[in-house]
Image: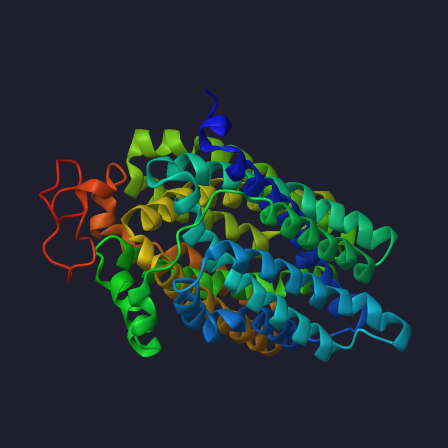
Length: 437
């Protein structure tokens, strides 16, 4: 039986829905900044503010979204988030006859779509274990990561073509359509979803929020991952916030070329998704995660180092995107699976929401700081600061118990992973009952 057949028809529908919506979203990731830079001629600080608006929902909405997702069925949340995102995106082309879109509208749409992304991502990561079972999480996540990789490969390139020869607002329409198609596919999933436990409704929102954060920070393997993620997200989001501005104004690249450079990230991520299982078996899960993050940090240094003839600039940027995507993908598949394996279903939404709140919220602040710093000291020096910050971020986890983790812990051998952190058992020997191993 093939892997896809074993995972089931409903998983294929989820996989297809994710692939289609991600393809459209990658187009918009390039389109919104280009509308701001080319049409509205914004400053570095305004670019940082636009990126901040898109990530601010992770600070404001992640924790409440986690409580909400753990109290309802997750599939309807996924469908509703897709429909709402499509409606928001369609306001951009609809404003064109009236002289829009304005900068303020871009920020509002970025914030609204970001809010939909919060709900969708929290529900998605909580829903996948229900759909495929915890024993097949790495296999399922590898396939889902291929969707991220393929969309990252084709999406920006397609977006660059559409923006170059049509318009950025026209490209946004395709993203809206992709969300609607995704909603239809998700709606066709037939596997029954268990209703949430009655006990959750009786717990106060404040206590529910605290349970999610406590579960994340008390786990000896998840805690170092979340700390590294917060530091890395702060600097990487800062770098990405001013990337398009740097590429257009200082490097002289057009939308098509920028799209092709971004597409190289997807090209590198696809083998990363395919190699993740091998890397975990060869080096151990913990070292695959840490090593992937370190190499991804080196790759980001290529952005401020790019210079010289146009062909060399493009080659350096493309190589950086490809290497970073390959190594980051290996790390992310294993750390996602680890979090899903050790998290009980009734806490899945809140643990994911807490992770998004801390990591993506840190990224929102980083985007705003980078925008301000770029306006003050220049784009290239700011990019150097951000790249070095990403390179140093894995130091947070190098000496943690994560480094000794050889295999994903089995759920049936891990009944108490959310007990207060204590002395770590060696990860390469059988764990005692109640320990993560």
